[in-house]
Image (cartoon, rainbow, N blue to C red):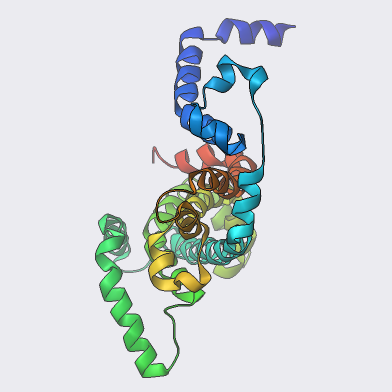
Length: 288
């Protein structure tokens, strides 16, 4: 009872109403898209989606748009997107965690200078590096006979490379908040850097790892440019498939609405599964 009364006393109606209003406004396009994808095409073409709330009893619902979008190759594109996204999340996390550990706990000459240069790399736009990277991959193919362009590894390399500066920055800030005495005690007990990293630092850094994993997953999942240039149409991801669903004259707009919600499902699951780590991972070490 006391807990309930304390919650009532601490309840700030102004802030709550403001947040609820912002959430409602932000959700309006998503709600409209969902309703449009579930209505019969003839009704969706002749009346706006908010008629569902004005006259809810005279509405006919259908999942034809979802069936057509799935038949048009959305499931294959879902598999392709997973193949691009999962390694593009795991690889930068592994590399960045090792680099952040070195920048935090290992003393070496020029450490702060290297870290400052690394942070500065975050301002380089991805689009400005596409042509040099593409030429480099072509030169690599001529030298080794291994083709990267048109295959998944090319997208993994690009996403990993451009994610590393931010990943190292976030993870290092978090590792700075870890108790140094625990690391020193492990060193006194004879633990190697490898053991300290895998048995102490990595388990304690789960919030930061999860925070960046959410960011990276959403960025790669919603990416169109990298997948289109370096993977190609033959292994099309969901963003490219949505463009194809629209058609030359925009006749497939309802299938695009349905396909958008198919592509939205997995990112929502990932976000809600990891959201409890999100704020902790981003704010830890921010005041150091």
